Amino acid sequence: MISFQFLLTAFVVVLAPGTGVLYTLALGLGQGWRAALWAALGCTIGILPHLAAATLGLAAVLHSSAVLFQIVKTAGVLYLLYLAWQSLRSGGALQIAPNRARDTGPRIARRGALINILNPKLSVFFLALLPPFLSGAAATATVEMALLGAIFMAMTFAVFAFYGIFAARARSYVLGSDRLMSWLNRSFAAVFAALAARLAIERA
Image (tube, rainbow, N blue to C red; front, side):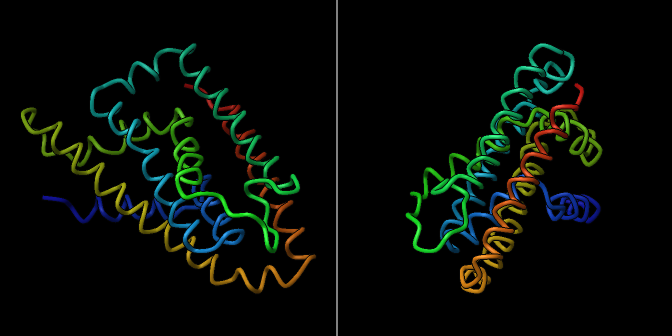
């Protein structure tokens, strides 16, 4: 049975703004609600490898291996800096601008998935979050971990989709102001860069 405590904890964690939320908001503002839903889907899919790692115990290996952790972390930092650049570059994937070419859904989802896949702390997070809510029966632990992870992913998609659709509703207002578009592009770039800096100082 899924406890209310788990549902509340998972909801609070998902609701807190992070890199995935920022990416979904940027796509909603820049390319509309369909792009935002693809972004939410991609970020949700990016959780799968970490959930599998936590379920299979691989997260403990990642946590204990400084070299492996550093490799994944460095790739994540570089990717976040790339997204910051894409927010500023004329015609960049995340730039908010009127009449810009729209990316395909799979491409948007792929970028969203990479955001989470390249965050090594997610595996450790799942290893810490899920076990306290298990029944304690060794025979069903894997199934229970998978079920809790699936619920967490469903919540992630729903909340991210809400954020993205909300941003898409504000799109016409944003696109009507050159000053606001410029400010948002710089703000998204700054936050992605700040998230890259935070990830860079994380330790296994």
